[in-house]
Image 1 (cartoon, one colour):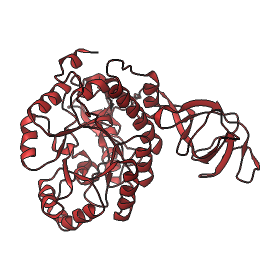
Image 2 (cartoon, helix red, strand yellow):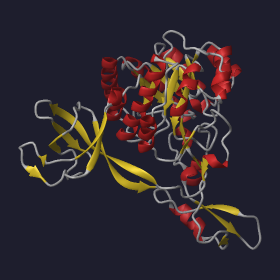
Image 3 (tube, helix red, strand yellow):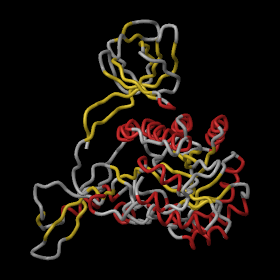
Image 4 (cartoon, one colour):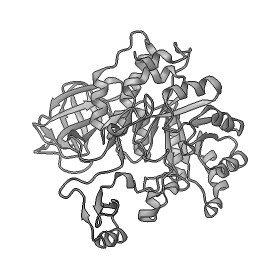
Length: 446
């Protein structure tokens, strides 16, 4: 174990001190997979007041179904209501919070004091978790929020392991930290680039991820270098196009790839022991906009690591399989964020990265016949006989095999599983269970 671990005050786990694994639930299906694959709690967005306006946010009816499903696993559901509210947002907050409470939601994740105070009055049974949007990174700020009646603090991503340990030493309150997922180039989301470039308020749910755009450098007649936004595939609007067309300067690095202000993604799978010994109560995975494959894969890996260290701290070993699984779901290069040291230039993506092997979620197991070893699989991406696929599921289920003869539900032979959600059958080499996943390698991506 490294020096950071040696410096941590909590050298042994306290009885029952097993951190909550908190996963994103972008929609009802993703929520169910997150819980089935090992999440102790899931955070979702409602139709209002969250920071993911483009997500498949939940209606109150869907929230009730989510809570009912979570209860079967002993899991909890939290709702993000972490916008910075303007005057026009205030009307309706009381009714919204009451509806959350009636739906059985366990907690809300909040940044704005106005919503915090309203929740205390209108929905007192809801726990209040302070959002990372508040950029809380010191123990005195944590103490302040505790005195304001906050149940849990989601620390800013900028807090170091040493600072987290000190916070736990000074203040007796639940602490939640992000352990995996995208990092913001601003201070825990306090960014207004999106507002300026696309008139979409990043702190009211409209972030267009301007830091992920590609940028060019231009030089005008020996004047200072200016940064000009390149046309971005999905979000370049007419204002940006007109601005670029009006430039009379020349590119400083013609022919070279544009650069970005894009941070690498956070990954603490290699440091689960340090995180658990720090006393943090909840490990949070980012990604409400991510795929089912991403959520299931990442949750499954962290679930196994947490359980393994909790069961046998002295004999714990990081399994290479967990790392391999994490990388199969990765969207960007990974690092440890601010936990172990201050990020430098190597922790940002300034240009094209080395291509990585990419995987597609090819199928979902819906049934398995032990006597015939036939699996019924729902198609999620095209696959065919002869292709190598991987099966994985909760608790360490994992094996590779080639797809054999495919048949449809009537027993007719198929040359491929071509149609979305099509049910097909083929023989598998090891037992599988409903909700196990099948993936295939599809090449490399940047």
